[in-house]
Image (cartoon, rainbow, N blue to C red; front, top):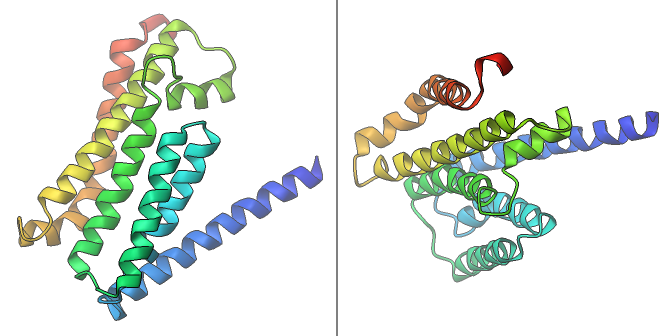
Length: 198
């Protein structure tokens, strides 16, 4: 038991260290080497690799293959040696991550699959009542729509569509996100969970 706990803590610590290193490298690229031909591969590559690995382990082979193809294209773009303007790197990072999350959540809503939030709830609570199954499915849908909206907003606010909005979006969207997600959760609970089960 102690070994398993130590191993779990070590994995979490390694993951946190990798996330911090990724953030530091991304910041350095954005501020000091914006025009490096490898910037896009370094910024998007790790997220795409993690997504492809998750897709493979979840049995979504077509999604994993798409991830591998994206990694190959990123490497080819770096090898060609042509840099990409920093504003497009910001767009690719912000919109790309949200789009990947939308695909990940949304793919679990297909017929015959278990919604992601339902699977997480089942791990914690065991069996789920029909009302809870409906609720967790709606929460999965709400998160999918949220990620799609964030990716769309990133694209709409990116240069040259609106340079002023593009500058404001990274700072204005985080404060708006918690109220929006709280409203969506309340809507799902109100519509799907009977009062006696709330």
